[in-house]
Image (cartoon, rainbow, N blue to C red):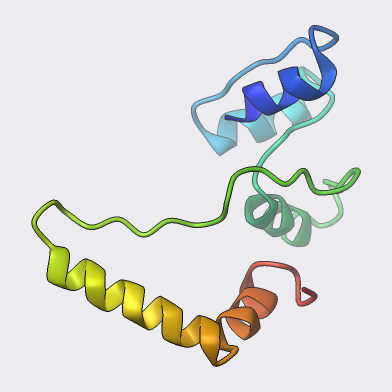
Length: 109
């Protein structure tokens, strides 16, 4: 999905490489084979925090998609109903915002 986001934002101005593994991406950056990496915020935050100042975060977040998804196997209608009810409950009582603010938005919503 990141390639599509970059193409939508910058057109053909970029040479985009796709890697199968984070280790390959980080090695390419370390070896100056690429100028920048695009990855999800949680992953970027992790590598920034655990890199002994080797890596930096650049620019603003690029919002993409509609949020997180929860999957269940076909035939699990009861489970899906229970999950949906729990989500509605935590949304209504403010728990969802608190969890999101703590774990997914860097502490600020």
